[in-house]
Amino acid sequence: MTEALHCAFVELAAKTPEAIAVYSDAGVLTYGELNERSRVLAERLTADGAGPGVPVGICVERAPDLLVGILAALRTGSCYLPLDPNYPADRLAFMVQDSGTRLLLTTPASRASCPPGPTVVVLGETVVTEPGTKPVAVVPGDTAYVIYTSGSTGTPKGVAVRHSGCVAMLAEMDRVLEGCDLSGVSAASSVCFDLSVMEIFNALCRGGAVVLVESAVHLSESRYADRITHLNVVPSVMNGLLDAGAVPANVRTVVFGGEALRRKLVDRTYRETGADRVFNAYGPTEGTVFCSFGPVSEDGTGEPTIGPPTATDRVYVLDGNLERLPAGESGELYLGGAGLAHGYVSRASTTAERFVPDPFRRGERMYRTGDVVKFTDGGELQFLGRTDHQVKLRGYRIELEEVEARLTGCPEVREAAAVVRGSRLVGYVVPAGDGAAPDGPRLDTGLQSAITGRLAVELPDYMVPATLVFLTALPLGPGGKLDRNALPEPPAADPGGPLTAAGSPTEVALSEIWGQLLGLEPSGIDVHAAFYDLGGDSLLLVRLARLMTRRFDRRVRVPDLFSFRDISSLARWLDDESGAAPEVVQSARLRASARRAALRGRGAAGR
Image 1 (cartoon, rainbow, N blue to C red):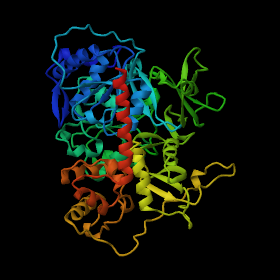
Image 2 (image 1 turned 135 degrees about the vertical axis):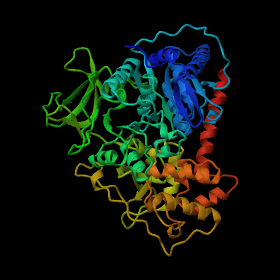
Image 3 (image 1 turned 60 degrees about the horizontal axis):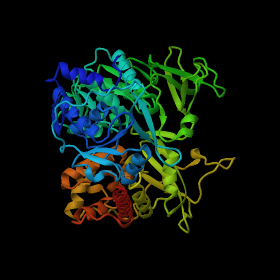
């Protein structure tokens, strides 16, 4: 067994340099080319201080350079810290500061997204070198990457994952996926989501090819979609792909993960695609991508399980006294074994709280997942729910407490709660001052735009509530705590008068795009109605941003769609040549820019 995540790739590149490693609309690379470019970059990173124990930030758009950077960081012995260029600037700055990252890799296209502080290395500015530095020997227990997940205290927390856990994960995939075609493995997950590790390295360490796409929502738009044979996908996204008839024709294997999988979707997948093998994978980031993984048969009955435990992980179902429970009885899931992460970066107390002594293995630890499960009689795991308020949306892990903390940090908000309803995140707000709703739950487009506009410059788009419901007070249970089950359904939007049809050419074009996505007649869409109120969801919002970018030849990001929620305001923004943001968002961005400038100034003074 190779001891480091990238070693099998380097060995394959030496044996089959002409084989295709990466397909991408931005370019195609062979194993030899990817290996050489990552070697050259590793030499440069080493000269700039990369090495064992040194995190290297990777702030690169979804192009082959992303894989070049990840491999280069690993080859130096460093761990990599994925930084999505589309994340809000403050969140990226927090991740860099919290992790102690002093070296950051980017490209000219993503340079403006980089937070201040670290030494920045820009791809394309490196010089080809002959091999100079000897390959760094990686200890299996060294950290391979740090991925930040949502935090219940209001700030994200970084999970440090070991090389040994990654290597064990790949060995398990080899065993479970034996015989599957890896000639085109989809890589559509954000690198800030640990499913990306499985997507990238399952292909590159087994002689397959990565098909790098912008996101699974845009799968059919990729020039190389027809090369995808192995599709990794979140269930909610797969439903959208099936609805749109957008699953590539050559897909033969589908691996689900990130959300609960339902039998109805499994049946649709077998019936409506060419897939002949379907798998379900489960696992928290703290357990290195997955800890249970198994096939889901075509002729099965009942809801799918999350599979049997992997051969390299220890999986316990325990009661409140940490006693093992027999099959059929529900309890909390605890994990141990090869996949266990080091813990949380810079959070010793949180690490001690969640990574506890293993009572069944002296001197070892286990991780409290917070998931409620039970073993079936056949030895597989059935997911039943959570012990806390963590949820999954589009496969991303969200601590509702973090969303609530950001909501209550807005000056317009006195109290707040958040829940997931269907495929949307809904916030419940008691307004500050005299803004409380006098007649029960209500919607307020203007107030919502102000609040979500603030959140859009602080949180990733999947953590910004799609809808805000304004209440006079949050419902409380007998003990005085928030009763989430008593939070009302969002009220229907009030059209407030006769329909206002599109007038300007921009409004007409937007109505056509909205109609295409929502299955509505463009002439029947009110230009003052919000996208979500017409049936949109978070997945369609991603497609909307992409379609608008193409149609209007102007970059449209999902956060922009939280600021301009209807066709009328979007059209005014698009027609404004200055591209001005609304006042609240613009002021927040100016404050963030001022903070970054101040940090750069302090850094320059220190040098």
